[in-house]
Length: 560
Image (cartoon, rainbow, N blue to C red; front, side, top):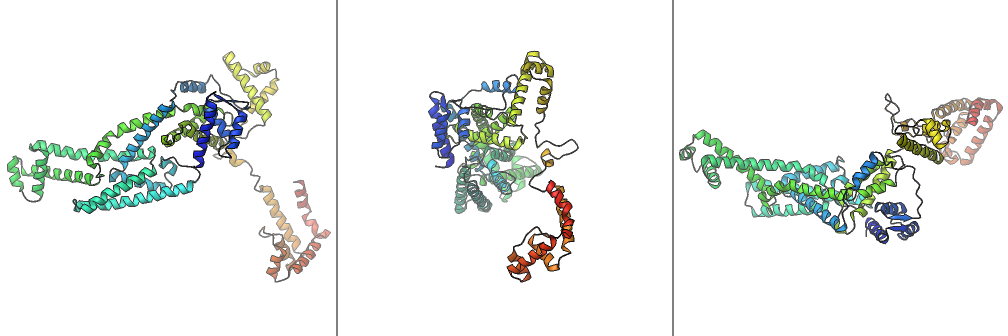
């Protein structure tokens, strides 16, 4: 069993243990997590239980923020509270309806050469990195071996592309030999192979939507060609079969234009134009037939295309029902991440995006609940949002407590007075000096996002202006350069060999200090001889006369 499947199974077992009473102790959760031997973590288990509205007894919850129940957040929560929650059976039925609709749309892709061509063009975009592979496939993939799975997908794409090229060549050959049994058999075989591989690949709804416009073009060509044939039949007052026979006789010189003109009582020029239009329409229909999967034929393809809007509607309806029935998971998980630098509604938005992804990839045949599967996506999206979007320089814990007290008092007074309270009113309410309130109020504006721009005139972010301690400062760089110059002055008092040995030994030229052995190899001298030269050179530099050159630099270094 894969790690992801193990995790989902364990979470379901934990939920089953707590579901009967609707509560579970924190110690019991910790024991369960320890028994999982690293398959799940305590935060994952707690978020999952919270999402399922299980009471966790004995847990100390420290939150920096709270939900304000008189603002848009509360209105949103009230609205979401009206959403109908699906029971287990309803969820499964809805998920299967959504999956069946997706399968029908996927089958439509591989039913004709034109939509297969569009799919293959998207494969190329995936290889170029213009379409993310995560967005391309709707198959639920384990996240443990992403590179291996990506490789498998690329192999499938390559195989589909090769079979598409072969199919194109076969269809082109059928234009010249429409009754060739070998090519007809090969065409059917290639369609089956492409269909199997696409089913394994599992196209996402987003990609299926990108292919959708192709069907309108196919349908337009089909209907326009049929309209020409219908109009010509009506104008000549003959059945369609007779019309096709007439145009065939004319273009194979079995019947002259004059004879046909007299037969239908129509001027030759007008009749010739009608028959040319009929021939073109017949060619269009024949081409569409050749490009269609022989298992269902052109008629089957057209019927599926006409039903596609209804299928899309079924898919969207089922998908929305699953999303709405599980929004509470997003809200409950978001509550555990309040006060970490991202607004509550932003957390919910991130979670909702993740829920949509989970719904699109959910496989009802696996046997677990959608909520159990979705919890990983929701948690990951929120923690990533906190890490990526809220790069905030946080306050010390005691300052956070002061700020929280101030904000709560401001909120309470605003509700009571119907306006923004003054500093004096907050001071009296909390029995704290106005000066203290003023400094605390300033903290509310002191938390600044590092992604914020410096000013309207400066496009740099604040993070770009903060000194990186891992790199030397400009002063240090200049000081090092000055030291190098001063050292070179001092080294002039040494012999060229002594100076060169010290330069190499301490990396004064390239910041790469050499060993005695390395320097010995350069001068073709023994290690001991190099040590003696170094010792003699350093003795010369220690004399009072030469050391004075470095005194000012050394004083600066000591002050640092």
